Image (tube, rainbow, N blue to C red; front, side):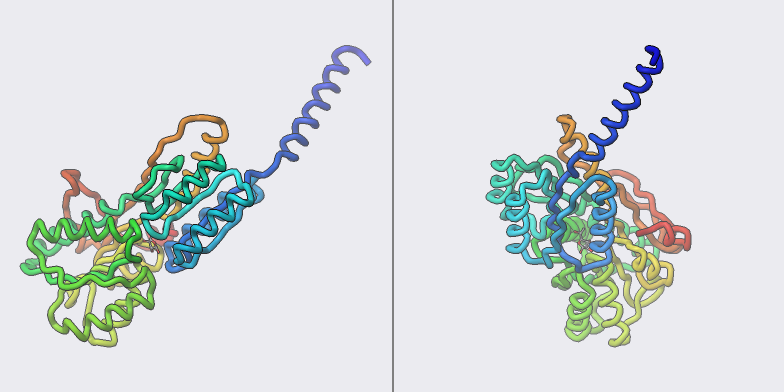
Length: 335
Ligand code: GYE
């Protein structure tokens, strides 16, 4: 064998060894403590994580659906510590009560990435990827002000169906909307939780229709599924909603089914919350694995949706907001 051939053989053998070394590399173990399965948004979030952290992509994902149970979520995180996973992803059901369990993760040397909702009473995590819920609430409020002005509606009497109490998504959306309501002197008649579910939204709206018959012209649902339930309740009570009807119906999330209801003239405006955070979480994990610095907060990009007639100009914190007209193509491209 001449030198050149020998070199080629050695290089080939090295390549084979390298390939098998890569192949034999242990998958990255990830534990994900998901909130539950309460909404379309949640389904999209879960799917996004399962797609990104798949076996094909080199991951071994332990997925726990915590069914909106805070204690079960802490237990899931502790079980991940016991399993000695490489990374823990938490979508915190509520924003507080996290410091002890995050300290345990820290002591076990397992980096935590918080996704979607925030943890507000501990900073013992590597990074957070999610949305600015207060901005979503402010946008809904400022849109409502501009839309009502354009429609010549002088008085706002609003009913709010809020999300799961104590979740940062609920806190942010309520804070943002209430701030605007106070600024313009609106009457927020009531705010009760529908727990981010369709059944919850329907139940709250049934009570609202009985208690406040004829007294409201705005209904704010903090997610699409609550809006679906609220629509059923309003249908049964003979209350009409959507552009040009009795009630201006505002929703958050803007998942496919929500946008379909905007297109059908039922939801007047829908404020997106983008659930596709997993690719950004993967970037964080890759950086951590490479020993690189990561950004502590990564914000998702989101859009505000309506039909042409409900597209108005408004600002949030001095920044002009763009709105997107819902078309079939827009719906098709949505999760
Ligand atoms: O809006 C709702 C889901 O945490 C942002 O949770 C998320 C919220 C979302 O159940 O649909």
